[in-house]
Length: 501
Image 1 (tube, rainbow, N blue to C red):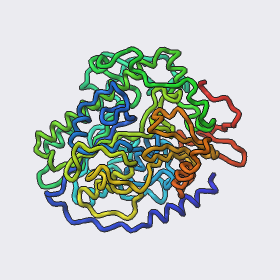
Image 2 (cartoon, helix red, strand yellow):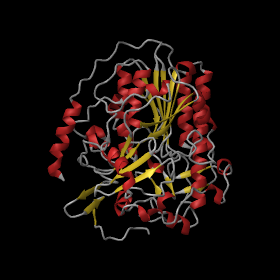
Image 3 (cartoon, one colour):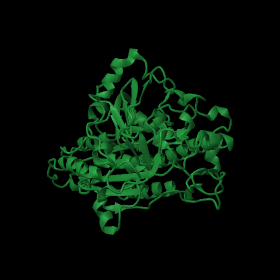
Image 4 (cartoon, rainbow, N blue to C red):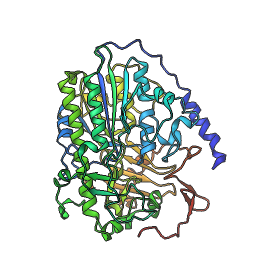
Protein backbone atom coordinates (compact mmCIF):
# COMPACT_ATOMS: atom_id res chain seq x y z
CA UNK A 1 0.00 0.00 0.00
CA UNK A 2 2.84 2.43 0.79
CA UNK A 3 3.96 2.31 -2.82
CA UNK A 4 0.70 3.99 -3.81
CA UNK A 5 1.07 7.04 -1.58
CA UNK A 6 2.97 9.03 -4.26
CA UNK A 7 -0.19 8.78 -6.39
CA UNK A 8 -2.16 10.08 -3.42
CA UNK A 9 0.10 13.12 -3.12
CA UNK A 10 0.28 13.78 -6.84
CA UNK A 11 -3.48 13.80 -7.40
CA UNK A 12 -4.18 15.94 -4.36
CA UNK A 13 -1.43 18.35 -5.35
CA UNK A 14 -3.43 19.09 -8.48
CA UNK A 15 -6.57 19.69 -6.43
CA UNK A 16 -4.70 21.76 -3.86
CA UNK A 17 -3.15 23.98 -6.49
CA UNK A 18 -6.50 25.36 -7.66
CA UNK A 19 -6.83 29.10 -7.56
CA UNK A 20 -8.00 30.57 -4.26
CA UNK A 21 -9.76 33.85 -4.73
CA UNK A 22 -8.77 36.76 -2.48
CA UNK A 23 -10.81 37.51 0.62
CA UNK A 24 -13.41 40.20 0.38
CA UNK A 25 -13.27 43.40 2.35
CA UNK A 26 -14.79 43.54 5.81
CA UNK A 27 -18.35 42.32 5.92
CA UNK A 28 -21.17 44.78 5.99
CA UNK A 29 -24.17 44.51 8.25
CA UNK A 30 -26.27 43.46 5.26
CA UNK A 31 -24.61 40.05 5.08
CA UNK A 32 -26.78 37.34 6.64
CA UNK A 33 -25.72 35.41 9.69
CA UNK A 34 -25.31 31.64 9.48
CA UNK A 35 -26.61 29.15 12.05
CA UNK A 36 -24.94 25.86 11.13
CA UNK A 37 -26.49 22.92 13.01
CA UNK A 38 -25.08 19.37 12.89
CA UNK A 39 -26.75 16.26 14.30
CA UNK A 40 -24.55 13.20 14.86
CA UNK A 41 -25.70 9.80 13.53
CA UNK A 42 -29.08 11.21 12.55
CA UNK A 43 -30.76 9.10 9.87
CA UNK A 44 -33.98 10.00 8.07
CA UNK A 45 -36.16 9.32 11.13
CA UNK A 46 -37.30 12.95 11.32
CA UNK A 47 -40.65 14.47 10.43
CA UNK A 48 -39.64 16.30 7.25
CA UNK A 49 -38.13 13.11 5.75
CA UNK A 50 -40.82 10.69 6.94
CA UNK A 51 -38.33 7.90 7.67
CA UNK A 52 -40.25 6.67 10.74
CA UNK A 53 -43.95 7.27 11.21
CA UNK A 54 -43.59 7.78 14.99
CA UNK A 55 -40.78 10.35 14.80
CA UNK A 56 -41.57 13.51 16.74
CA UNK A 57 -39.59 16.51 15.55
CA UNK A 58 -41.90 19.54 15.67
CA UNK A 59 -39.03 22.02 15.45
CA UNK A 60 -37.50 20.48 12.36
CA UNK A 61 -41.03 20.47 10.93
CA UNK A 62 -41.28 24.14 11.82
CA UNK A 63 -37.93 24.87 10.15
CA UNK A 64 -38.96 22.93 7.05
CA UNK A 65 -42.08 25.11 6.82
CA UNK A 66 -39.81 28.18 6.82
CA UNK A 67 -37.44 26.83 4.20
CA UNK A 68 -36.52 24.05 1.78
CA UNK A 69 -35.98 20.39 2.62
CA UNK A 70 -33.63 18.35 0.45
CA UNK A 71 -35.47 15.04 0.56
CA UNK A 72 -32.77 13.15 -1.32
CA UNK A 73 -29.64 14.36 0.50
CA UNK A 74 -26.79 11.95 1.19
CA UNK A 75 -23.49 11.95 3.04
CA UNK A 76 -20.22 11.38 1.18
CA UNK A 77 -19.04 8.82 3.73
CA UNK A 78 -21.04 6.78 6.25
CA UNK A 79 -18.65 7.58 9.10
CA UNK A 80 -18.01 10.70 11.19
CA UNK A 81 -14.47 11.79 10.33
CA UNK A 82 -14.55 11.33 6.55
CA UNK A 83 -18.08 12.73 6.28
CA UNK A 84 -17.32 15.88 8.26
CA UNK A 85 -13.96 16.35 6.54
CA UNK A 86 -15.67 16.08 3.17
CA UNK A 87 -18.33 18.62 4.14
CA UNK A 88 -15.92 21.17 5.61
CA UNK A 89 -13.49 20.95 2.67
CA UNK A 90 -16.07 20.25 -0.06
CA UNK A 91 -13.87 17.39 -1.24
CA UNK A 92 -14.84 13.75 -1.65
CA UNK A 93 -13.20 11.09 0.53
CA UNK A 94 -11.95 9.56 -2.71
CA UNK A 95 -10.05 12.82 -3.38
CA UNK A 96 -8.40 13.00 0.06
CA UNK A 97 -7.99 9.33 1.00
CA UNK A 98 -9.62 10.04 4.37
CA UNK A 99 -11.96 7.11 5.00
CA UNK A 100 -11.42 6.18 8.66
CA UNK A 101 -11.76 7.82 12.06
CA UNK A 102 -8.13 8.89 11.58
CA UNK A 103 -6.25 10.89 10.39
CA UNK A 104 -7.19 14.50 11.08
CA UNK A 105 -6.95 16.19 7.69
CA UNK A 106 -4.56 18.90 8.91
CA UNK A 107 -1.90 16.16 9.13
CA UNK A 108 -2.42 15.00 5.52
CA UNK A 109 -0.45 16.39 2.59
CA UNK A 110 -1.48 18.26 0.49
CA UNK A 111 -4.89 19.07 2.04
CA UNK A 112 -3.52 20.20 5.41
CA UNK A 113 -3.68 23.88 4.42
CA UNK A 114 -7.03 23.83 2.65
CA UNK A 115 -9.44 26.65 3.49
CA UNK A 116 -12.44 25.17 5.27
CA UNK A 117 -16.00 26.42 5.18
CA UNK A 118 -15.78 28.42 8.46
CA UNK A 119 -12.37 29.78 7.48
CA UNK A 120 -13.81 31.08 4.21
CA UNK A 121 -16.44 32.93 6.22
CA UNK A 122 -13.84 34.22 8.67
CA UNK A 123 -11.70 35.47 5.76
CA UNK A 124 -14.71 37.41 4.52
CA UNK A 125 -15.53 39.34 7.67
CA UNK A 126 -17.58 36.88 9.71
CA UNK A 127 -17.15 36.15 13.41
CA UNK A 128 -16.97 32.36 13.62
CA UNK A 129 -18.04 30.40 16.69
CA UNK A 130 -18.36 26.70 17.42
CA UNK A 131 -19.64 24.41 20.13
CA UNK A 132 -20.21 20.68 20.37
CA UNK A 133 -19.15 18.25 17.67
CA UNK A 134 -18.40 19.84 14.31
CA UNK A 135 -15.11 18.18 13.47
CA UNK A 136 -14.50 14.61 14.57
CA UNK A 137 -12.26 14.73 17.62
CA UNK A 138 -9.91 17.45 18.75
CA UNK A 139 -8.08 19.81 16.42
CA UNK A 140 -5.10 20.58 18.66
CA UNK A 141 -4.12 23.29 21.13
CA UNK A 142 -5.15 26.95 21.40
CA UNK A 143 -3.26 28.09 18.28
CA UNK A 144 -4.73 25.32 16.14
CA UNK A 145 -8.22 25.99 17.48
CA UNK A 146 -7.91 29.71 16.77
CA UNK A 147 -7.13 28.94 13.12
CA UNK A 148 -10.35 26.94 12.74
CA UNK A 149 -12.82 29.21 14.61
CA UNK A 150 -12.63 32.55 16.42
CA UNK A 151 -14.57 31.39 19.48
CA UNK A 152 -14.86 27.91 20.97
CA UNK A 153 -17.67 26.94 23.32
CA UNK A 154 -18.18 23.78 25.39
CA UNK A 155 -17.40 20.44 23.78
CA UNK A 156 -20.78 18.93 24.63
CA UNK A 157 -20.89 15.18 24.16
CA UNK A 158 -22.63 12.62 26.32
CA UNK A 159 -22.91 14.61 29.53
CA UNK A 160 -24.34 12.72 32.50
CA UNK A 161 -23.63 8.97 32.52
CA UNK A 162 -24.92 6.09 34.63
CA UNK A 163 -22.58 4.42 37.10
CA UNK A 164 -22.57 1.23 35.00
CA UNK A 165 -23.73 0.33 31.50
CA UNK A 166 -27.49 -0.16 31.14
CA UNK A 167 -27.39 -3.03 28.62
CA UNK A 168 -25.60 -6.39 28.62
CA UNK A 169 -22.00 -6.65 27.45
CA UNK A 170 -21.84 -6.25 23.67
CA UNK A 171 -19.62 -8.15 21.22
CA UNK A 172 -16.38 -6.63 20.02
CA UNK A 173 -14.97 -5.77 23.44
CA UNK A 174 -18.07 -4.34 25.13
CA UNK A 175 -17.31 -0.85 23.86
CA UNK A 176 -18.38 1.82 26.41
CA UNK A 177 -20.31 3.78 23.77
CA UNK A 178 -22.53 0.78 23.05
CA UNK A 179 -25.25 1.62 25.53
CA UNK A 180 -28.74 3.13 25.60
CA UNK A 181 -31.79 3.59 27.76
CA UNK A 182 -33.09 5.56 30.75
CA UNK A 183 -31.43 6.41 34.04
CA UNK A 184 -32.15 9.22 36.55
CA UNK A 185 -30.61 12.51 35.38
CA UNK A 186 -31.70 15.97 34.28
CA UNK A 187 -31.95 17.27 30.73
CA UNK A 188 -29.76 20.17 31.86
CA UNK A 189 -26.97 17.69 32.63
CA UNK A 190 -26.79 16.53 29.02
CA UNK A 191 -24.07 17.87 26.76
CA UNK A 192 -26.55 18.79 24.04
CA UNK A 193 -28.58 20.95 26.41
CA UNK A 194 -25.42 22.72 27.55
CA UNK A 195 -24.18 23.56 24.06
CA UNK A 196 -27.63 24.85 23.09
CA UNK A 197 -27.57 27.11 26.15
CA UNK A 198 -24.13 28.44 25.20
CA UNK A 199 -25.23 29.03 21.59
CA UNK A 200 -28.33 30.88 22.80
CA UNK A 201 -26.07 33.19 24.81
CA UNK A 202 -23.94 33.87 21.73
CA UNK A 203 -26.98 34.78 19.64
CA UNK A 204 -28.24 37.04 22.39
CA UNK A 205 -24.90 38.87 22.73
CA UNK A 206 -23.86 38.88 19.05
CA UNK A 207 -22.24 42.18 17.93
CA UNK A 208 -24.59 44.27 15.83
CA UNK A 209 -21.91 45.34 13.36
CA UNK A 210 -20.53 41.93 12.35
CA UNK A 211 -22.30 38.87 10.96
CA UNK A 212 -21.74 35.56 12.71
CA UNK A 213 -21.18 31.98 11.58
CA UNK A 214 -22.31 29.89 14.54
CA UNK A 215 -21.72 26.12 14.35
CA UNK A 216 -23.61 23.96 16.85
CA UNK A 217 -22.88 20.23 16.82
CA UNK A 218 -25.30 17.97 18.70
CA UNK A 219 -24.10 14.57 19.92
CA UNK A 220 -27.36 12.64 20.16
CA UNK A 221 -28.77 10.36 18.78
CA UNK A 222 -25.21 8.95 18.64
CA UNK A 223 -24.71 6.11 21.11
CA UNK A 224 -24.78 6.00 24.05
CA UNK A 225 -28.41 7.07 23.66
CA UNK A 226 -29.01 8.04 27.29
CA UNK A 227 -32.33 9.74 27.73
CA UNK A 228 -34.53 11.00 30.55
CA UNK A 229 -37.83 9.32 31.26
CA UNK A 230 -40.14 11.97 29.83
CA UNK A 231 -38.62 11.64 26.34
CA UNK A 232 -38.54 7.86 26.49
CA UNK A 233 -42.22 7.79 27.46
CA UNK A 234 -43.16 9.63 24.27
CA UNK A 235 -42.71 6.38 22.33
CA UNK A 236 -44.34 2.95 22.69
CA UNK A 237 -42.39 -0.11 23.76
CA UNK A 238 -44.21 -2.58 21.50
CA UNK A 239 -43.54 -3.82 17.96
CA UNK A 240 -45.15 -0.75 16.40
CA UNK A 241 -41.89 1.10 17.00
CA UNK A 242 -39.66 -1.33 15.10
CA UNK A 243 -38.46 -0.68 11.56
CA UNK A 244 -39.50 -3.16 8.85
CA UNK A 245 -36.93 -5.90 8.37
CA UNK A 246 -36.76 -8.98 6.18
CA UNK A 247 -35.21 -12.13 7.64
CA UNK A 248 -33.45 -13.10 4.40
CA UNK A 249 -32.63 -9.53 3.35
CA UNK A 250 -28.91 -10.21 2.83
CA UNK A 251 -29.42 -13.32 0.69
CA UNK A 252 -29.33 -11.32 -2.56
CA UNK A 253 -26.57 -8.92 -1.51
CA UNK A 254 -22.90 -9.62 -2.31
CA UNK A 255 -20.85 -11.25 0.41
CA UNK A 256 -18.42 -8.34 0.06
CA UNK A 257 -21.08 -6.03 1.52
CA UNK A 258 -20.22 -7.56 4.90
CA UNK A 259 -16.59 -6.47 4.54
CA UNK A 260 -17.61 -2.82 4.93
CA UNK A 261 -18.76 -3.53 8.49
CA UNK A 262 -16.85 -6.75 9.13
CA UNK A 263 -16.24 -6.61 12.88
CA UNK A 264 -17.51 -3.56 14.73
CA UNK A 265 -18.54 -2.49 18.24
CA UNK A 266 -22.11 -1.95 16.95
CA UNK A 267 -23.96 -5.24 17.53
CA UNK A 268 -25.75 -7.21 14.83
CA UNK A 269 -29.52 -7.45 14.92
CA UNK A 270 -29.12 -11.07 16.04
CA UNK A 271 -27.47 -9.96 19.29
CA UNK A 272 -29.94 -7.11 19.81
CA UNK A 273 -32.90 -9.48 19.48
CA UNK A 274 -31.38 -12.27 21.57
CA UNK A 275 -30.67 -9.80 24.38
CA UNK A 276 -34.12 -8.22 24.16
CA UNK A 277 -32.68 -4.81 23.34
CA UNK A 278 -34.29 -4.03 19.98
CA UNK A 279 -37.31 -2.15 21.35
CA UNK A 280 -35.14 -0.34 23.89
CA UNK A 281 -32.61 0.73 21.25
CA UNK A 282 -35.19 2.03 18.78
CA UNK A 283 -37.13 3.78 21.52
CA UNK A 284 -33.96 5.39 22.90
CA UNK A 285 -32.91 6.52 19.42
CA UNK A 286 -36.27 8.12 18.65
CA UNK A 287 -36.37 9.72 22.10
CA UNK A 288 -32.85 11.11 21.59
CA UNK A 289 -33.90 12.51 18.22
CA UNK A 290 -36.87 14.22 19.87
CA UNK A 291 -34.64 15.63 22.59
CA UNK A 292 -32.20 17.14 20.07
CA UNK A 293 -35.14 18.55 18.13
CA UNK A 294 -36.19 20.38 21.29
CA UNK A 295 -32.70 21.89 21.62
CA UNK A 296 -32.91 23.08 18.02
CA UNK A 297 -36.25 24.62 18.95
CA UNK A 298 -34.56 26.57 21.73
CA UNK A 299 -32.08 27.98 19.19
CA UNK A 300 -34.86 28.96 16.79
CA UNK A 301 -36.79 30.63 19.60
CA UNK A 302 -33.78 32.75 20.60
CA UNK A 303 -33.06 33.69 16.99
CA UNK A 304 -36.61 34.96 16.64
CA UNK A 305 -36.52 36.74 20.01
CA UNK A 306 -33.29 38.48 19.02
CA UNK A 307 -34.84 39.91 15.87
CA UNK A 308 -32.19 38.23 13.71
CA UNK A 309 -34.27 35.41 12.23
CA UNK A 310 -35.00 37.29 9.00
CA UNK A 311 -31.30 37.89 8.39
CA UNK A 312 -29.97 34.44 9.27
CA UNK A 313 -29.38 31.46 7.00
CA UNK A 314 -30.10 28.28 8.94
CA UNK A 315 -28.86 24.90 7.76
CA UNK A 316 -29.47 21.64 9.61
CA UNK A 317 -27.58 18.53 8.53
CA UNK A 318 -26.78 15.04 9.74
CA UNK A 319 -23.31 13.61 9.13
CA UNK A 320 -24.63 10.15 8.13
CA UNK A 321 -27.44 7.77 8.97
CA UNK A 322 -27.75 4.77 11.27
CA UNK A 323 -29.23 1.28 10.96
CA UNK A 324 -31.48 0.02 13.73
CA UNK A 325 -31.90 -3.56 12.53
CA UNK A 326 -32.31 -3.04 8.78
CA UNK A 327 -29.99 -5.30 6.76
CA UNK A 328 -29.37 -7.29 9.95
CA UNK A 329 -27.16 -4.69 11.63
CA UNK A 330 -27.04 -1.63 13.83
CA UNK A 331 -24.73 1.29 13.13
CA UNK A 332 -23.54 2.92 9.93
CA UNK A 333 -20.70 1.85 7.58
CA UNK A 334 -22.93 0.82 4.67
CA UNK A 335 -23.88 2.19 1.26
CA UNK A 336 -27.62 1.66 1.73
CA UNK A 337 -30.30 4.29 2.24
CA UNK A 338 -30.53 4.03 6.01
CA UNK A 339 -26.83 4.82 6.34
CA UNK A 340 -26.44 7.51 3.65
CA UNK A 341 -29.69 9.50 3.65
CA UNK A 342 -29.54 12.46 6.03
CA UNK A 343 -31.53 15.54 7.02
CA UNK A 344 -30.57 18.65 5.04
CA UNK A 345 -32.79 21.70 5.52
CA UNK A 346 -32.08 25.33 4.62
CA UNK A 347 -34.10 28.36 5.69
CA UNK A 348 -33.61 32.11 5.56
CA UNK A 349 -33.03 34.87 3.01
CA UNK A 350 -33.01 33.59 -0.56
CA UNK A 351 -34.58 30.21 0.32
CA UNK A 352 -38.09 29.24 -0.77
CA UNK A 353 -40.52 28.45 2.02
CA UNK A 354 -42.30 25.13 2.60
CA UNK A 355 -40.47 23.64 -0.40
CA UNK A 356 -39.34 20.04 -0.89
CA UNK A 357 -36.78 18.95 -3.47
CA UNK A 358 -36.38 15.33 -4.60
CA UNK A 359 -33.20 16.09 -6.52
CA UNK A 360 -30.01 14.37 -5.32
CA UNK A 361 -28.01 16.54 -2.94
CA UNK A 362 -24.69 16.02 -1.20
CA UNK A 363 -23.29 17.31 2.07
CA UNK A 364 -20.23 18.68 0.27
CA UNK A 365 -22.65 21.01 -1.53
CA UNK A 366 -23.22 22.94 1.72
CA UNK A 367 -19.95 24.88 1.41
CA UNK A 368 -20.61 26.46 -2.01
CA UNK A 369 -24.31 26.88 -1.20
CA UNK A 370 -23.71 28.93 1.95
CA UNK A 371 -21.02 30.97 0.22
CA UNK A 372 -23.44 31.89 -2.57
CA UNK A 373 -26.37 32.63 -0.27
CA UNK A 374 -24.18 34.96 1.78
CA UNK A 375 -22.57 36.70 -1.18
CA UNK A 376 -19.05 35.43 -0.50
CA UNK A 377 -16.54 35.04 -3.34
CA UNK A 378 -16.98 31.75 -5.18
CA UNK A 379 -14.09 29.31 -4.80
CA UNK A 380 -12.65 27.27 -7.65
CA UNK A 381 -11.20 24.49 -5.50
CA UNK A 382 -14.42 22.81 -4.30
CA UNK A 383 -15.99 19.58 -5.53
CA UNK A 384 -19.46 20.47 -4.28
CA UNK A 385 -21.90 22.44 -6.40
CA UNK A 386 -24.30 25.04 -5.09
CA UNK A 387 -27.83 24.03 -4.16
CA UNK A 388 -29.12 27.58 -4.61
CA UNK A 389 -31.09 26.68 -7.79
CA UNK A 390 -33.04 24.05 -5.79
CA UNK A 391 -33.42 26.41 -2.82
CA UNK A 392 -35.07 28.96 -5.09
CA UNK A 393 -37.06 26.40 -7.12
CA UNK A 394 -37.37 22.90 -5.68
CA UNK A 395 -38.20 21.50 -9.12
CA UNK A 396 -34.89 22.67 -10.63
CA UNK A 397 -32.93 19.70 -11.95
CA UNK A 398 -29.47 18.64 -10.80
CA UNK A 399 -26.85 17.50 -13.29
CA UNK A 400 -25.38 14.74 -11.14
CA UNK A 401 -26.34 12.13 -8.55
CA UNK A 402 -25.30 11.88 -4.90
CA UNK A 403 -22.23 9.72 -4.32
CA UNK A 404 -21.25 8.00 -1.07
CA UNK A 405 -17.94 6.16 -0.66
CA UNK A 406 -16.73 3.90 2.13
CA UNK A 407 -13.07 3.06 1.59
CA UNK A 408 -11.44 2.81 -1.80
CA UNK A 409 -13.49 1.07 -4.47
CA UNK A 410 -16.82 1.01 -2.63
CA UNK A 411 -19.39 3.52 -3.83
CA UNK A 412 -23.11 4.19 -3.76
CA UNK A 413 -24.71 6.25 -6.53
CA UNK A 414 -28.14 7.74 -5.73
CA UNK A 415 -30.35 9.33 -8.37
CA UNK A 416 -34.00 10.31 -8.00
CA UNK A 417 -35.24 6.76 -8.53
CA UNK A 418 -32.30 4.40 -8.18
CA UNK A 419 -29.55 3.34 -5.80
CA UNK A 420 -26.59 1.65 -7.45
CA UNK A 421 -23.75 0.14 -5.36
CA UNK A 422 -20.36 -0.96 -6.63
CA UNK A 423 -17.98 -2.85 -4.32
CA UNK A 424 -14.20 -3.08 -4.60
CA UNK A 425 -14.39 -6.71 -5.76
CA UNK A 426 -16.63 -5.71 -8.68
CA UNK A 427 -19.93 -7.00 -7.25
CA UNK A 428 -22.96 -4.75 -7.53
CA UNK A 429 -26.43 -3.92 -6.26
CA UNK A 430 -29.31 -1.96 -7.78
CA UNK A 431 -32.53 -0.88 -6.08
CA UNK A 432 -35.62 0.87 -7.38
CA UNK A 433 -36.18 3.18 -4.41
CA UNK A 434 -39.60 4.27 -5.62
CA UNK A 435 -40.96 0.71 -5.84
CA UNK A 436 -38.73 -0.78 -3.14
CA UNK A 437 -37.93 1.85 -0.48
CA UNK A 438 -36.64 -0.82 1.93
CA UNK A 439 -34.05 -2.00 -0.63
CA UNK A 440 -35.18 -5.61 -0.29
CA UNK A 441 -34.80 -6.66 -3.94
CA UNK A 442 -31.39 -6.41 -5.61
CA UNK A 443 -31.99 -5.93 -9.34
CA UNK A 444 -28.33 -5.92 -10.39
CA UNK A 445 -28.60 -9.32 -12.04
CA UNK A 446 -31.73 -8.49 -14.04
CA UNK A 447 -30.80 -7.90 -17.72
CA UNK A 448 -33.81 -5.60 -18.09
CA UNK A 449 -31.90 -3.03 -16.03
CA UNK A 450 -28.60 -3.22 -17.92
CA UNK A 451 -28.99 0.32 -19.26
CA UNK A 452 -29.72 1.69 -15.78
CA UNK A 453 -26.64 -0.06 -14.43
CA UNK A 454 -24.48 1.36 -17.21
CA UNK A 455 -25.78 4.90 -16.66
CA UNK A 456 -24.96 4.74 -12.95
CA UNK A 457 -21.54 3.15 -13.42
CA UNK A 458 -20.37 6.20 -15.34
CA UNK A 459 -20.67 8.26 -12.14
CA UNK A 460 -18.18 6.13 -10.18
CA UNK A 461 -15.43 8.47 -8.93
CA UNK A 462 -12.59 8.85 -11.38
CA UNK A 463 -10.26 9.85 -8.56
CA UNK A 464 -10.36 6.98 -6.06
CA UNK A 465 -7.35 7.23 -3.79
CA UNK A 466 -6.13 4.58 -1.35
CA UNK A 467 -6.28 5.40 2.37
CA UNK A 468 -4.17 8.37 3.39
CA UNK A 469 -1.06 7.78 5.51
CA UNK A 470 -1.84 6.93 9.16
CA UNK A 471 -5.41 5.92 8.32
CA UNK A 472 -7.04 3.89 11.08
CA UNK A 473 -10.36 2.64 12.40
CA UNK A 474 -12.99 1.34 9.95
CA UNK A 475 -10.37 1.16 7.18
CA UNK A 476 -10.76 -1.57 4.54
CA UNK A 477 -8.44 -2.36 1.64
CA UNK A 478 -8.86 -5.00 -1.06
CA UNK A 479 -6.36 -6.91 -3.20
CA UNK A 480 -7.98 -8.12 -6.44
CA UNK A 481 -5.04 -10.42 -7.13
CA UNK A 482 -5.73 -12.53 -4.06
CA UNK A 483 -9.41 -11.65 -3.49
CA UNK A 484 -8.47 -10.84 0.09
CA UNK A 485 -9.25 -7.80 2.22
CA UNK A 486 -7.53 -6.16 5.15
CA UNK A 487 -10.01 -4.91 7.72
CA UNK A 488 -8.47 -2.78 10.46
CA UNK A 489 -5.15 -4.54 9.95
CA UNK A 490 -6.59 -8.07 9.91
CA UNK A 491 -6.73 -10.39 6.92
CA UNK A 492 -10.25 -11.23 5.70
CA UNK A 493 -10.54 -14.13 3.26
CA UNK A 494 -13.58 -14.68 1.07
CA UNK A 495 -14.20 -17.98 2.87
CA UNK A 496 -14.02 -16.64 6.45
CA UNK A 497 -17.21 -16.94 8.52
CA UNK A 498 -18.97 -13.59 8.92
CA UNK A 499 -18.69 -12.41 12.54
CA UNK A 500 -21.83 -12.12 14.62
CA UNK A 501 -24.12 -14.30 12.52
